[in-house]
Amino acid sequence: MSGNIKFLGAADTVTGSRTLVEYRGRKILVDCGLFQGAKPVRDRNWSKFQPDPASIDTVVLTHAHLDHSGFLPRLCKQGFKGKIITTPGTRDLSEIILRDAAWLEEESAKYANETGYSNHKPALPLFTVEDAEDAITRFVTEPRHQWIDLGEGVNLRFLRAGHIIGASLVQLAFDFDGQQKTITFTGDLGNGRSHILRGPDQVSETDILVLESTYGDREQPRTSGLDALAAVVKRTLARDGVLVIPAFAVGRAQEVTYMLRLLEDRRQIPSVPVILDSPMARAAMAVCLKHPEDQVLESAFHGSGEPMLPRQFEALTSADESMLACMRSGPMIVISASGMLSGGRILHHLKARLPSEQNTVLFTGYQAEGSKGRYLQEQAVKEGTVRIHHQEVPVRAEVVTLHHLSSHVDQHDIIAYIERIRSLPKQILINHGVPEAQVALANMLRERFAIDARPVSQCPRVDFG
Image (tube, rainbow, N blue to C red; front, side, top):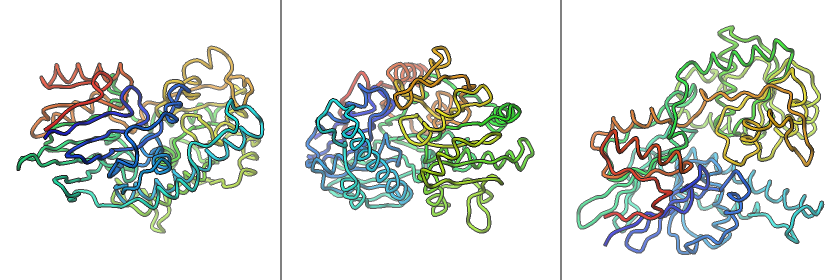
């Protein structure tokens, strides 16, 4: 009897990672993420989930980011009763992320009903805080580097992915009449250039590799990310401006904060107020302290156990503090979420800072197609305005993107990683990318390795066995 892999999400996008593996009547879902970006993509979150969530035996989670974990409360709401297996670090971060996402869903629905802007009467949240708590109770943690027997001929192992705290490659091994077939899911694979995280573990062999392609059609700069960040900081501070950095609350916010301290220590930038306006990012820093196994350097932490922070670091908690920060004068640096400008306190900072030529907005992470972040990157400067909170906000600030700081592998990294696999996979299935990136990477891998590489945008189901 053969098994099969069905790509229920991240098949033609970078978000909504959901991959179903069926084997001898068992259903294992690898990742359960939210679709993000343009409204037609986000609307997929409301589609009926197939198969019936109650029929899924187990969820295995690669990491905590919303596009990989954020649909879990909805899955539980619709009847999933099984275990969610992941690493301790991912469990700790998911608890923060899912509770925050549920609160935002409830607040968004409440606001829609109060203002009447929704077409739905009443507007409902995708899931509630109660649903998130239900999902959190289902988490079961396992260590990396050990095979775990899931029963009925299925084994599971986690390897470090180097993307965020807890992030892991997932290996599933299946028994076929005494012969083992292994499928490896990269999830989001780190590139080894982080200043705070160890690089990914190297897979030695696998029959099938399910490979992300966020940057599968391009190569990122290899010049120093620290130097590039320093140049933007100095340019902005010379204007007495405010540098606003939209950052993912988990992962990028901690990386950028640490890099700013390194630049201060190297005297590449002056010490100025650095404001972290994201309670979730601050909570994620506490999780980092609990998981030194993922840290690249002991020097990332003081002897007191506190993260190494810029000298004039301020972490804001209340909404009042956030609004006051929007009125402060530069020079200073503000780091806030959400990273793709889908909501959160960052929008208030942008409304306050975009109209002035003194200021800079610095993107450090991927911006999904259709997101407000992508629009600000590519169109807003030309158009002259961006819509925030139902208002047209003038865009006069400098808008910069630093690709140096990505936590994803690019095409060059992927080729190097596959070259180090001792026994090449028989098949590579390329997901977690737009179709153009998937196709470009598949063509490159076929040419380079003479291997069966397929973009899953063209093959949503694959049999194995």
